[in-house]
Length: 106
Image (cartoon, rainbow, N blue to C red; front, side, top):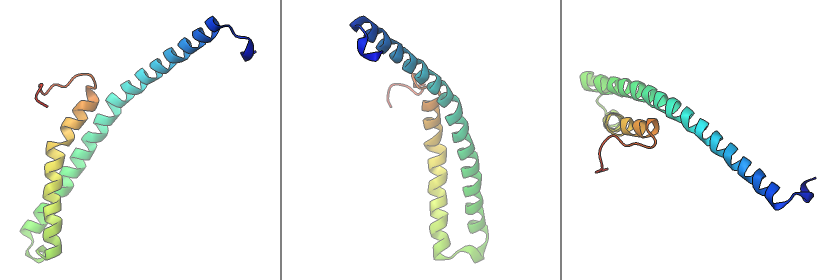
C-alpha cells in the first residue's frame, strides 16, 4: 500500500528512481556518442560529394549557366563550406561530450 510508507521508505524509493534515471541517462549518452557522429559522417560524405557534383556540372556545362542555376551553385558552395567547417566540430562535440579537444578559445 502506497499510503502507508514511512518517510525513510519514500526516500529510499526516490533514491532508487534517481539512480535508475542516472543509469538510463548514462546509457543514452553512450549511444549518442556513437550514433550521432556516424550519422554526421554520412551527412558530410553525401553532402560534400553531392554539392561538389552540382558545382562541377554548373561550372563545366555552359548550358547550365542560367540565373537559377547560379543561385543553386552559390547554395551548393555555401553548403560545402558549412559541411567542411561546422559539421565535423559538431560531431566531435557529440563524440566527446565532456571534453573539447580544440582548445580553450572556443
